[in-house]
Image (tube, rainbow, N blue to C red; front, side):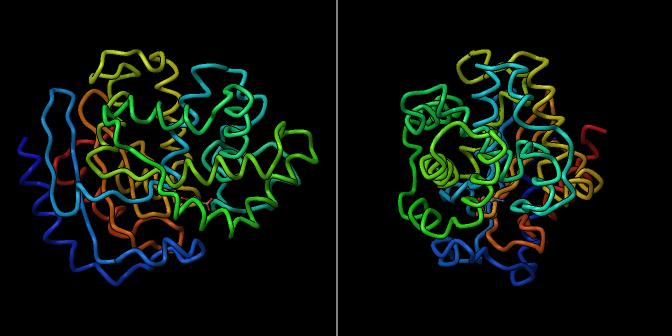
Length: 304
Ligand code: GLN
């Protein structure tokens, strides 16, 4: 399969969609990103890589980081994490507060903001230096020691984090947050502000495509069962209230972020990341979602 040709054709077709979405502006530093950027990168388990467009440009991974923090916590806590957070789709926007009060401060899943904050709270209990630990983990899984926190984005989100603070305090009132909320939000804003390229992200997702074993350094990051579960969560919850539609259209486990990135994979085969900053009304990359639907259709392969 000539993946290079497939993504080149998709790139040429979908460039015309620029202008159909809107860059996230509730984090002021993200509003300044040039909207007309678009990259695709594929890494295969047999060592091939393919890129097109802005695949080497670093962008803010935002909620894609929730996959990495959950993987880290899973390694330490195994099933214990499910006392703090659920694993059902929420059917609500990523930053919604409504379910949380009805459900006694236990977020529906680890990929909505409330769930990710619980996971970050656990990381803070597990590590003395959680920010260092997160960066070290991400660097090691993609084999790139240059991955960094974009301090400007972290600061910008931190000063506009009222809603996430509200989620944190509401959960604290139910006894589901252990650490100081301001400190949790600070770590969370940093993990969201990790800067990576499509190429880095595809490498970082290869261990998921390889059932938990990182093909880059042969480290077993997660057990086969844990990797299966992380994939199932991405399929059912990775795109918030658009998760069903993404499964329907692309048929892949994946995760989006409001920076415009979408990372996904075909188990046993490859990881693919798309980046284009303009978002649809669910906060997922407009062109990113389209690209992955075209990709699995063109190659006649998905998890189904
Ligand atoms: N940092 C963003 C927030 O908390 C992440 C949201 C996202 O990427 N969907 O609002």
